[in-house]
View 1: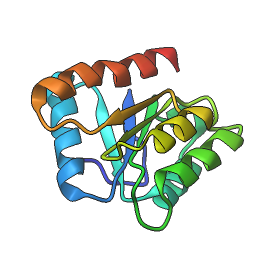
View 2: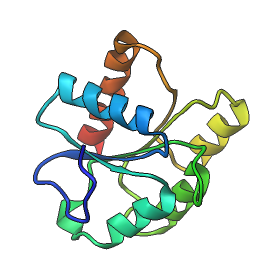
View 3: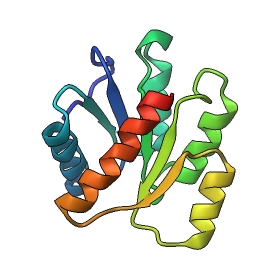
Length: 140
């Protein structure tokens, strides 16, 4: 798992989630499905924006994955901040959360998220959802 102020070389996801188990699950599943894609993990939205502000534009992630329920800056606040900043507004964002709220789903999409995914509990579900993340990278 990459936790650093430097962007990895190549394609990578930037994943914001405060749960260490979810962080490890996401990282291990991405690594299993495509070892060429790195995952940079931050614990909340404020850390995510600080990370982005400290890397060059040429090293931005291909996709940002946000949990909604995080301390300090939650996913909705972070999504709003990303979509008003010219440097980041075109990076695909997928909400990856335990929230099953229709309101959270609708608000996320209205604010510019490319998808809203309820966290899977097994490898098969993640394998199917991984393709959404990879597709967001290809579109971005």
